[in-house]
Length: 468
Image (cartoon, rainbow, N blue to C red; front, side, top):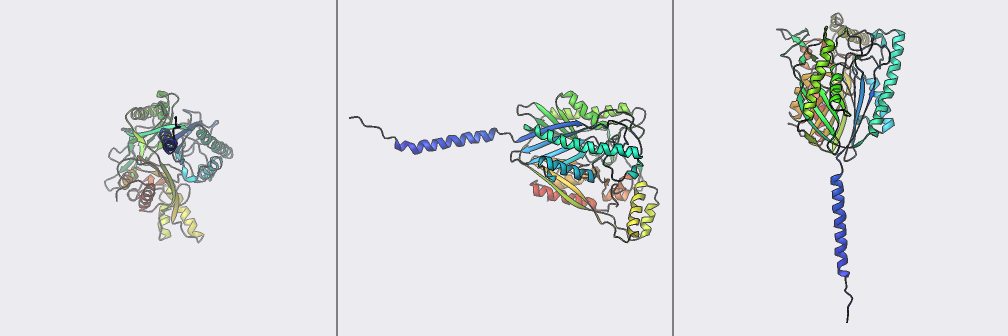
């Protein structure tokens, strides 16, 4: 007699096996998912007509040496956290312009303010834009109309740029390393035997940050898509006699990289180079020099990008904090009147502005509120964005605060208000002590302590392990 085999006892095992297969497939799928999605875009922002130039005082452009560009990179980690970096061949982003721009970007893309970082190359051969006080630039009515029209067009171009970068998003791999810019990055503060700054000029003994951080963006198959790199040096190879629009050495470095790697986008991030100039610079050979310095930097970036790099892993944490930076308080009008008669344009302007505040019966401003940003990439890299023009001493101090490795310190980020000095710089004097150039006020000794404390706080909240 034949008996039907009872397979009921196999059903639980089969079910368990099925669940195991689903689990294994799911794990493999998650393992194959890219840690990063990255989008890139660029737009030409060269003025189309003669325009007032920024950087050296009153000038109007007479032609173009090289086109200016704005570029964007949008990052998204495996948890959906986004971050946007916008770089531009411009002198800097002023607070009113940056505020409106970031609101417009947020309205179009959903990006929150703390997820956006702006960085200007600080070229001194670019256009005036975003002017709130045109009288300071001695603009004619016609020149002001040109500047206003360029400003509105630029803002729209930057919003469109970000949307294009988001639309370009695709799976990517990130890695990074550091190179050295070499001797063309030179300290510019001449210090006398009494420890006082006696003016500007090449100072081989002065502090500089010659690190060249390089972020490589690859497709999943290893093909190069983009390079983000930094250098801490003023874009002033072209001097005040130049009348042609240019992004200076930073622009030529980007062009060199993109020529070496066709279809790759290179983005320049300005570092803590407030007290550094290119060397040599200016003079009858300045066009040759701007090509030379750009090629020198571009070659180093390409060398680093082709070398073994450290992978950057997810997750990413992005933060931005508005910090009250202390301003100098004056006990008497006589102090301010002495500064007002010092002969320095910016010191005189600030002192007269503070005297006008006292004459109205108001209190002097005690702080200037400025944004400081920090992006933490897993345990692999910390990107700090300082506002204003910060010098090399900030890199030294933040190295001590954050630890010597896995950091990238940028300046000219989010907004610029003028120089961000240190107590040492303020004691030495010189151009870097001129205070706020958009608002009114002179920074107080100890301002660096507030900056470093803020960065340490953001780093700790982001999970970076720092020295105690």
